[in-house]
Length: 178
Image 1 (cartoon, rainbow, N blue to C red):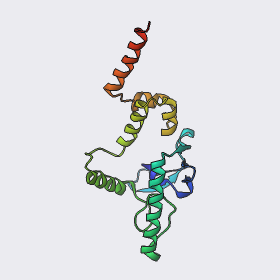
Image 2: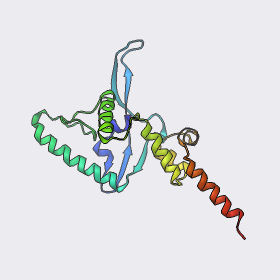
Image 3: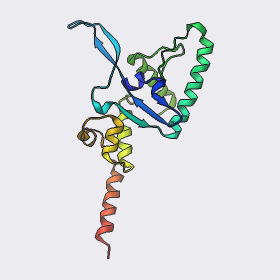
Image 4: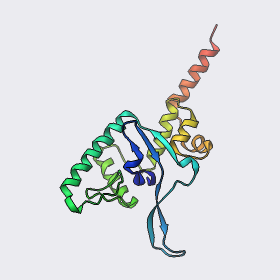
């Protein structure tokens, strides 16, 4: 979520269909021992976190539509619009606090009628689906920005039963070759 909320239009190349991950939105304490926090943009925690992510064509198309919608909202808002340069903003151009963004996410999920799940489940689903499609775990690791491949293999590879059955069918084909 921090990467999405920190994504700037300057990091999105819609013509080539590539996103560059350069920063993350994180909540930090203002002073040691203090309960107050503030949001700051920081570089990714690891070298692997800085990465290029190719976009599926459909995602690039939706981002173009979103950019057009934001331009319309900017005109409607007039001088009240604050251009933050961020991709995911409200109707006045302001970035989201992650706490508020979660509320927006849950409303969208409810409206879409796809059940209840948390935002981080999207990451798990992405990784699992990529692995189910036969994508190499190293590629999935790089797309996710994880520094260790073991994170992908141990955390995200919730293999569906049919994938196991397909693996055994492949083995059976080898065993029954003449």
